[in-house]
Image (cartoon, rainbow, N blue to C red; front, top):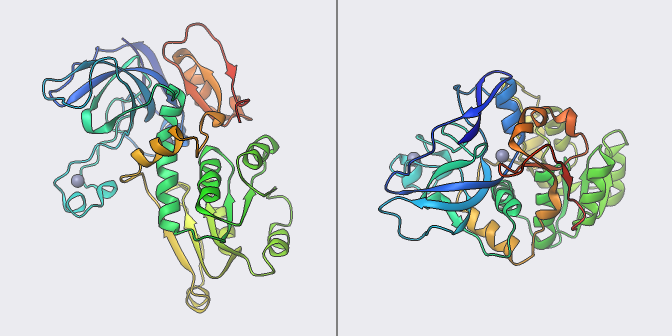
Length: 350
Ligand SMILES: [Zn+2]
Ligand SMILES: [Zn+2]
């Protein structure tokens, strides 16, 4: 089967890999759509250390073509979305419900072969059967959406809260939609790209501003001079994580949701955190939120199809590893069954 193997930093080898054979508790999925995540680009560029060689791709969905002997809930022909986070189930974290912090976490497409391939072996417990009405691209989007759900849950959004999302990429716009249905009374997006701003506004944001504007002044004018109840950092930029602190209301919450560089640090005033009773939180992965994502998408509460702007064949993965080649894209989907060099734009289904 065809697969893309990352053999080292900035090295991608397209070629034939072994067709996966399922273990007794696994299913083999023919991959139909696999999203490209900033994490993939970070691993490829060497800023997110990982052991090579590896077939990346952790946001995927496809059709089951083979099942292991002990699989009970999935049959050949089922369309499934994959939760890539395979946990050990026996460490202290798993046994106390913190499966995302699992000491033996082995995510598909990060430490074991993932979705940039024609086929992938997936444990039964990580495969979610999708309704026929859901596109494979939407199935791939359940993974980032499930992470956004975790962030929204931890931020404890309340009815009427004023919220800010810094970064209007696919994650940021998933957060915008979740804040909308969670009852935020005003959602402000900070994002430099006008294409992304427009999509965020179409999908639920009330105000979009560029970081080059006087953000604090504008936000003060929209929040009675108080700041926002919750500020999400969803750009993965530590400078933005610092700015987020300056936009929160006294008593409010700053959610560091984006994945910043491991080597960055920022100054924080402990006096201010104490005096203004600020809560600073982080959010990691998607514990127990994949089925919530599936329900929110299948009922139309969250639109993830609109976030998929580009569909390209596996052969073009190397191009797509450079974000500069897809500057105005939201989510780029690898479609392993697509032939040729086609690129389709698809953000017209808002
Ligand atoms: Zn991802
Ligand atoms: Zn564990």
